[in-house]
Length: 371
Image 1: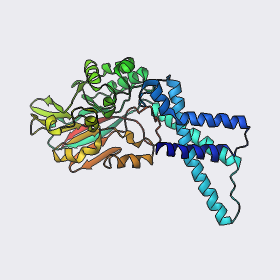
Image 2: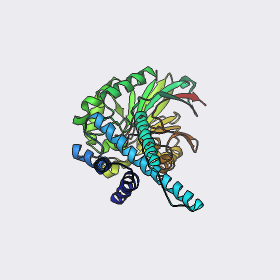
Image 3: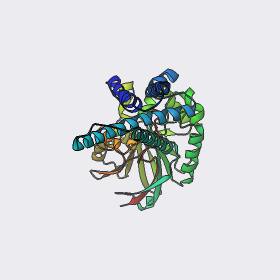
């Protein structure tokens, strides 16, 4: 299926857009080769590191690949739209189908510009987004409690040490009482990412830094990563909870493993185990990388679930497809049977498709209110 899809994309771009352009044959052949090379980005990534999730190229080359892949995808869609529009006009006017070189050049330019904008949006250090959440049963002693969520950092050669350091500086400046990370810290092994992830050790909040694992941690040496994250100062909740106190009042922060854990021979998510021994009258904030199990968490009495994984769909329109694979949850805030679910668009992005259009990255500061 993948071969068929790529074949269709390449035939539209090379045969239907490039070949009719009034360019020398040598230029057409060169551009066609570049399009084919770009379309195999994941193959080159696997050659570079053994995994499609960790392209071990210089950062400028990764940026170029993402721009090229984005250009090919947008060009395919725009060329199809142009073909359909011209065909309709030809049928209505009963004239031969004709697409001028100017229209093809314009389509190519728009595609390249959209891809460049998408890559720039993906690479930025996101601003802090504020959300107010009313929590049933929250003690007045916790009213105004600030919790900062980071998610889907995907520390790689694309989102490297310099980017991570800027994220840490902005997160620490947010003045949160607690920082949480809802999975997908990295792409790559500990040896690959040791230097790039090092700045995350400087994350600081009065009540600490808690986390839950994401599915990408399982793609590499999961146990090795859990040890390394712990050494960096992260308290990773693997079906566990921690209790935050203010005087006699308590707030439970629970975390579960990722839904994909069973495919890698690791412990599956277990919310009952995560909440075992927690105070019955204390509200629960759940860290669960994937949002799909939110109804089960709501049924268990969780007050607020924080998730990521979807990257918000990355591009408007594509988010509807991503939602279908995540029980309808893709970006932002949802009310699920009395529980608030928040799905982060992600702080970073998987470097295999690093484009954002209309779906900005974020770090999210939650202001908890007693209700």
